[in-house]
Image 1 (spheres, rainbow, N blue to C red):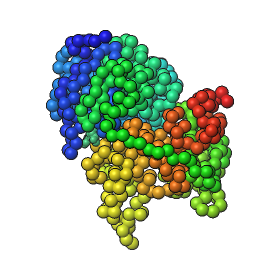
Image 2 (cartoon, rainbow, N blue to C red):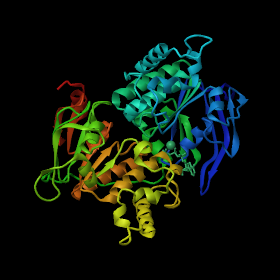
Image 3 (cartoon, protein in one colour):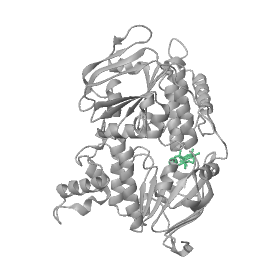
Image 4 (cartoon, rainbow, N blue to C red):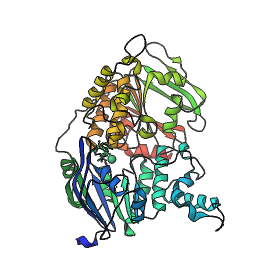
Length: 505
Ligand SMILES: Nc1ncnc2c1ncn2[C@@H]1O[C@H](COP(=O)(O)OP(=O)(O)OP(=O)(O)O)[C@@H](O)[C@H]1O
Ligand SMILES: [Mg+2]
């Protein structure tokens, strides 16, 4: 069905945005209609978040207009954006970490939940119930009284989505909402989005997963270098056409086969934490890529955090060998020997106000100190920064750019570069390709396999079946904090993984 321009609920006209050294948005125009899910696609740095940030009132365009239901909208702040009926789920988690789940969800509208009309007391019971209700429609059952800083990144994402839904906007912007959700949670979110579409909301949906376009999107907009290079019905755009428009460069990799498993470099014995893990056992071999698989909240990240001393170890033993025999080691000491790409790059992965080079060298500063007084050799550090910008194709004019000025996917590459620069024998990677585009994702997966072939042992948490299947030699499946199954390379397939994490094997 073709609709006339006047039916568009949102019209973006000739928007431009320049940053120092980067022309992030060039003459972008888009129409979006009620009852439609519009996919916004493009490689890392294409300008997707910039456009959404303008609609969300986080940034202002240098030139251009925005019309909402036919009337020109002046969006100068997030408050304005909300007034125009726009609800924005941003790419990076934006929550108050030391407040509770329900406070975060209803923060803006707290005054609507007073217990008595004239007195300044909140009806906390009602707030908690409402919050729990909203979250349960998303298939998320966290206690609304919990502080947000005790939640996993996936659960935090659910709280963000619940907050946006509670505002009841007519135009909903989702900037990579599924990048930290696992399969079950994704399906729930898709159901919600379909429901919102059926109730005539306008939805703009940014994603790097082209499968999601087929699943829930009606139309596609493709961006490249700040410009709109493709627009039309999703049915007319297959994956090949979309990726050709997204990037004219073909990037191909030869597959690296796994090396035969070497000796054990790390042995986790009966490891238990405060809640999770519960009595977890596994060995990691030299040159192996070991996957930790499970549903959101199954204890994957907690297992890594307890192993490396970020969460308290209650019982169990960790054995480690550098070259000789396996010997007991304390988690914090083990961390000094390892690399750890955390799941929340904004929370604990990066120094955002610092330049790229300082981030890249930050885990390995002692190798850049110049002399007895430990003065850092900035030139050497910058060279290291430049090296990884080149090797990892980080889209940045130079290594002096501040990390917060990079697009989400490029920030993720900086986190990985930081740990590669440390050159550890063991690398823990929690959702390593979160938010990176299809081409870069293949590059990172290739890199992990290449590191393994050079003798580095990797432990990878990923919520994506394809990814974990592609790169792992062996998978430990976790369920409710404990090991539910172990699958060898030949046993890894979609069904086995899903059955194992649901406890059906
Ligand atoms: N505050 C800023 N200062 C300078 N440059 C910026 C700033 N914000 C964004 N940019 C640049 O604008 C370009 C577009 O970034 P944007 O975040 O819109 O990309 P994106 O399409 O959302 O990418 P991703 O998929 O990685 O999230 C990038 O080159 C980025 O470095
Ligand atoms: Mg982005």
